[in-house]
Amino acid sequence: MQSHNVHVIDHPLVQHKLSLMRNKEASTNSFRRLLNELSTLMAYEVTRDVPMHEVEIETPLETMRARVIDGKKLVFVSILRAGGGILDGMLSVVPGARVGHIGLYRDPKTLMAVEYYFKMPQNMDNRDVVVVDPMLATGNSAIAAVERLKELNPRSIKFVCLLTCPEGVAALQGAHPDVPIYTAAIDRELNEHGYILPGLGDAGDRIFGTK
Image 1 (cartoon, rainbow, N blue to C red):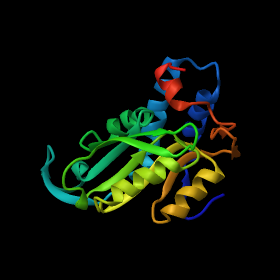
Image 2 (cartoon, helix red, strand yellow):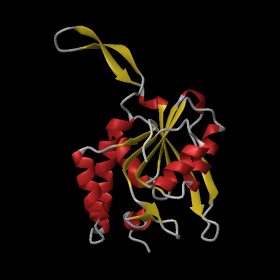
Image 3 (cartoon, helix red, strand yellow):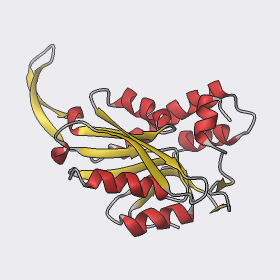
Image 4 (cartoon, rainbow, N blue to C red):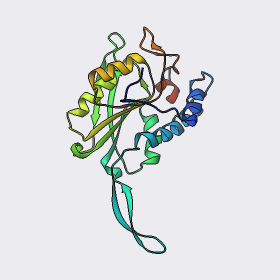
């Protein structure tokens, strides 16, 4: 299940850390630390095509024109609550980025996303948005988040997750074919409860030590 708009980040360090996170024996502390490290590594791929501009700087030897990114044009949007685990790693690479939050919970009966919080930086129309959520499972939360963000007319939107499955990819691409997906793995399938198999369990519970 792969298209030009789905990017599987198969770097050995990413895959190694993901395997350690999948292990059910991984402690909350190590799971959180690994997620932070893995997110930092994924940030390099996700920001590969970020626009750059030239500024004049002084090296110890002379003046030169040097290329830099405008971190303020980048907005990391975390889908609460589990998205915060990826957000921290991304911010360590682009500390100047702005941050938005979308609060969504999954209705246990319908599995549909219900919004309870939405807070974004101002002037989103000239910004590049990176939406982060560890799991792209049914795709309902991702679809709802992207729909809300499109109302603000940002310059671009990308979706970043640790894990997804064919059903999640198909759902998000069906609703928003213009939004590229970055993930560390496309797992086998979704079970009847909306969990990814083999997966790594509930990312939020494992990040925060809740059940």
